[in-house]
Structure formats: C-alpha cells, structure tokens
Length: 121
Image (cartoon, rainbow, N blue to C red):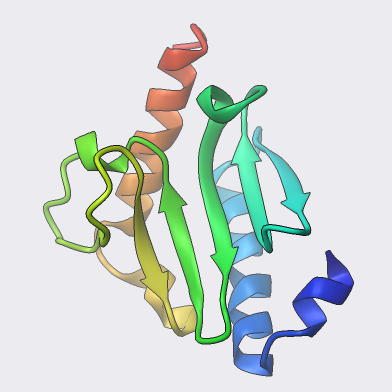
C-alpha cells in the first residue's frame, strides 16, 4: 500500500501516519491490515467483518475513521457521519481531528463490541 499512499497529497499522508500511530496506541492488540485496492487500513481482533474494530479509509481530501456498527453506538459529541444503517465514520481532515471529544470513546466502544462479537468480552 505504500505506493498507494504516495498517490495522496502530503496532508492526507500526514493524517494517515498520525492516525495509524494513534490507533496502534489505542488498540495495542489489534492487527493492522492494509487493503491496497480499497486504499484502506483495517484494525481487527479476528477474521472477517465481525473481527474489525475500525478502519481508516483514504481519499484525496482526507481520511474517514470507519466505525463498523457505529450506528448503534451512543454519539454524545455528534462526531459520527454517514447515513448507513450499520457503518458510520468520522471525517479526519487534520491530525488534530483525532483529539475531538468523543472519538476515543467511540473507538473504545467499537473495541468492546468487537470483543463481544468474538466472544472475548
């Protein structure tokens, strides 16, 4: 995926590097997987969609922090976007966006929900 990341503007690459580091810190047990054709990183505790905690989806203008089953999580800080019935995301257009109130809590909720789905709660 390295060549794929190089296709993005420097600000997107900078956000991606920062977000990957933050997610590795917040989710130390998660395995990071690169999906080159989808231009995405997935953080998972197990196989398949059931095992995914969150994703980073790259675009030319920024990154989406994808939260599987995010539509069912409390979003008291109103940071989730998207109209999906299951999957929601948080737009990241700067490295400071990961410091928004509520984002770490959403990732923690996604982590707990993933553990529960996998019977690791």
